[in-house]
Image 1 (cartoon, rainbow, N blue to C red):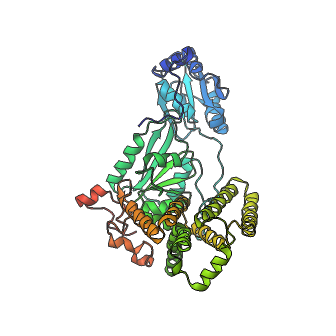
Image 2 (image 1 turned 180 degrees about the vertical axis):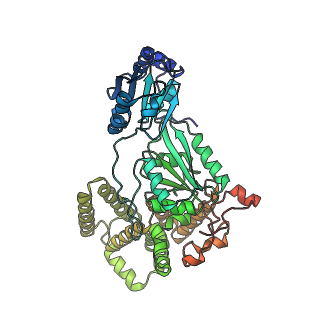
Image 3 (image 1 turned 90 degrees about the vertical axis):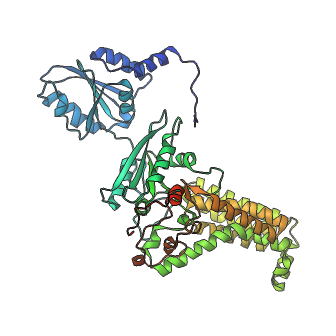
Length: 511
């Protein structure tokens, strides 16, 4: 797989050729030569700070190198420069006086370049053929805030940020266990994005871990800028409307999935984490369900299931009843519908498309505009357009009710990606209903079920725990039993290969 966002020029100029040659070199013992190589690598880089200094006691010349926008300058001044200039007593080991928590040594220019671009500081000393690397990252970042897409009712009001180390720390607060393992992979030829895979070693299935790790390592791209790009690269079927990984902004949700034997993927620079493998039923669950009484949680889950079918099939059902199967409508209701539709010049399909597309445009406008303006545009736009459309005779009152009910049902789905997928599915269902009536809806439903059964998420069945059947996982599906009865972790996250081989699963313990 070779996908490049910006392909380089075929012919390199002379400075670029020199920079490529330097990357393969080792660091020299001569400081002046190292400085020449440094300025050859970093041309037109005004934020590159090169601080010349004389180490006290030894009298050796040295330079400290870092990028101003990616480095914590207070840490550099207080814990590196001041000790080196004033307090060093060991002539051979100036790094002993530095009070930075983590430091290392490298001797290749490629490693030095990557370290500086990651926000670290590098110290080159005259007479030494290596560079000391200090962890001084301090790029701009926002404070921990409430998740924007996942409202918390009874859970924690903390959302992921753009720094992977802080996101991992938020998850560790929920899972303080040595079995929580983290595998780091660098992705992107230019961005060098850090991708972290979090899982419980004694719980997660190794077959799924191997598959996930292989897919990420095989990526050959210029850059991965957010978790959404990574999701599209590693999912099983990019042409399916259904998401095959869960994107979450909540650390408690990510910790819950890890405890169930799943894997959480964090991309440095992205405020969302990916969860894999998942099934269709996972998108109808919410962390708040486990903090509510199980009867209330079950009612809400059934409501979400109803909203799933309403969003996909309600407009199609209206079109089929009006166009083909009007004998199924009660007579009084049919007379009322006919009275209002008598003034509408369009067939039901065109009428539905006009309102559905108008609704999607209002929804998108409300998202892109600032929050106070977006809410105003959404409310005023819906009222004005709906009322004006009815008065102008473009659509009927019944169609306004159908479209509004569909919109409300789509908002009930707790996952944004799944909500977008089912909103998209209602359009082909509407076309099938306009062509074949109820029979078209049945054809669409059968096709949808067949697609869900054939779909996989990292090699695991997307339709589990129903196909294949895992009876123990039914305790937490469309309904959930009381928490004290959920004493086993879900088995539906196993790889298909492991299921066929009948391998022993380590997740026979409690949740």
